Length: 378
Image: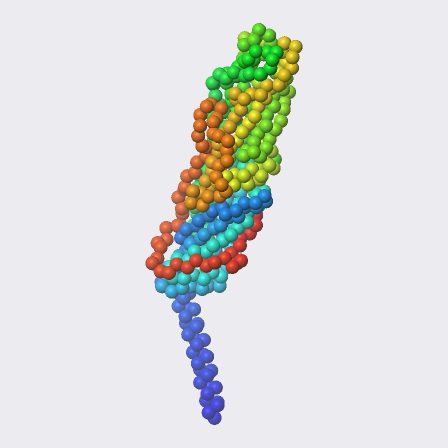
């Protein structure tokens, strides 16, 4: 009889526990529904580049999630995800299911591997968009316990460059052949112009149109038979070519000659590696030459006077001074064709939407990456 009574009491305790759990769940759900218990939200999202190799780039993301409740929350139905895009080109993403949040703020660490093959599509979008990129970071916390309610944070940052602007010049520059059979200067370049042909940009090629106004000071005509170029970005040759000209410049006259300079986009993933290794610094260098016939001679002239060198600097996440990559700039200089110096590239932080949650005074936990916070590889 005593055993039976004990069993009845045990069942009673189990029932009480079950009722208590059900009541607790109802209180939690009801609390979320009535706003008594707060829904976790995204406080901040911080990204930085941590390493780069021949084929991949590692992005570390720290997402701070706020728990407005006075107790910790461990919910299997709560998930967090984020995406980093540059002009709608997805660069990195990650997701974590079943997060545990301490009281106050919890910082979750993500390590995401990005394939460098994402760089050419981004470059195409950057040039097509007038050398303008919007870096967008979207982070979402979704809570299945309260009907998949989602709280999001969107951060925007604008990156702008002006790669060819300083090539446009009306400065007159002498062209020397440095040959024993002709005195220098053999020609003068009175004006240079350069622009992207955005309508002709493809996934494989980025063309720019280059023009020179050339003056012949000699008493004999010169025929410019070929115009050639080589384009480098941080010592990575991204383009080269030669075009037939057939332009005759008579004595005392001025003619316009031009060349279509094409960047081969498939080489830009190699450039990207060098760009990060130099802490997001690049030196663009275009080397021009002419093949000229005149006075019974044919000779090649290196156009040192108009070779174009342009420094380009980016700060994609706005924190490269705090988190530098590589050894900094290794450019050979920053003198432009106009004789002006400067660094190109600017970034502006946009407003963050839905990101005004107040930081609580509770505990702050920073979980270590146990392999469960590795994002998708793009």
